[in-house]
Amino acid sequence: MSLRINDIAPNFQAETTHGPIDFHEWIGDGWAILFSHPKDFTPVCTTELGYMARMEPEFTKRNCKIIGLSVDPVGSHAKWAADIEETQGSRVNYPMIGDPGLAVAKLYNMLPSDAGDTSEGRTAATNATVRTVFIVGPDKRIKLMISYPMTTGRNFDEILRVLDSMKLTTQHKVATPVNWKPGDDVIIVPAVSDEEAKAKYPQGWKTLKPYLRIVAQPK
Image (cartoon, rainbow, N blue to C red; front, top):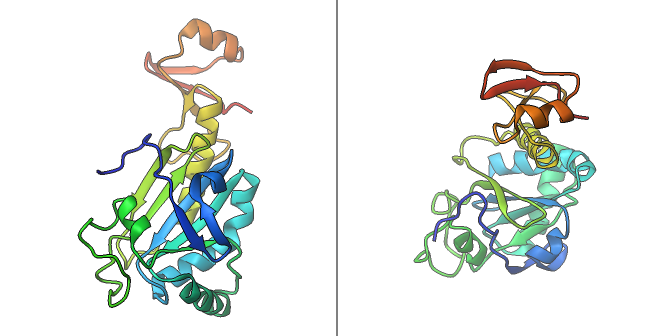
């Protein structure tokens, strides 16, 4: 079954570089980012894991955990982590899931059910679809999914921007417009009446259309 935004993120138990986890228990009451990789020792993914290692404090500030997944055993991940630190200048301190049986990749619909049950003999090309970023909310529901081709490095600054947007829009009845950045004006959602908006935004707002009302970002 394919996954959609607002579906419950499938739970699983797996070995990681930090020991065994239950995914939902590991998330706890915060946010989480699960980002997957087709194989260890691949060039684009090496740069991505290093960049996320540098960004981890920013996600931590936002009560968001990071976890990687690669279709290889945990022991291989540990060796890869040494290469990542050497070439990217940052140590990977977040856990990486080992998925040598392809169970998590299949559970998250990144590999077909008939893909077999072992990573042995598989190449990055045969695992090319294991290149998705999932953001999971405190309610354990999938809030975002973005899949990338193997040859295109992911933009994790954008993932951080989306996380900021989602945290803002879950706290306030607003949406963020195109190319929004933290601090920019936002949109009052149509479900909020003008009367309700007057109480919430006594400073007023700009009405471009009845359905398009622009207001300063709530603090």
